[in-house]
Image (tube, rainbow, N blue to C red):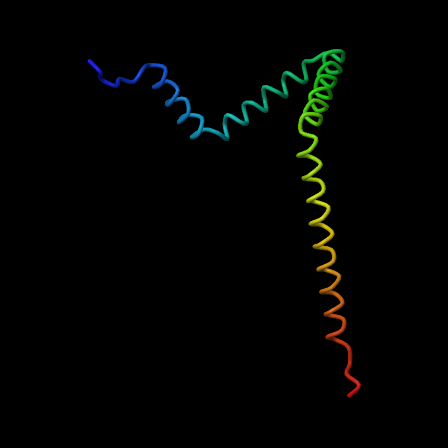
Length: 103
């Protein structure tokens, strides 16, 4: 009696996962349409409330991930500075290589 039978919920979940993986583009389109309709039918007060909740969620995210965001920004700035210095060095090298020799 210790047979490992699949439960209906596991079968249903597997089917749903396969369906959404196969139809992901259509599902994204439908979701965008639902969001567009919901957004267009909102009153100005509801829109303000939605924006305020979004701002609050952004603030919570920034406060919870402050160190990670700061590290990413620092790495981005450092990488950009390095790439800029490489580009300047390459431009200088190309300029020097095209100069006429006086020999």
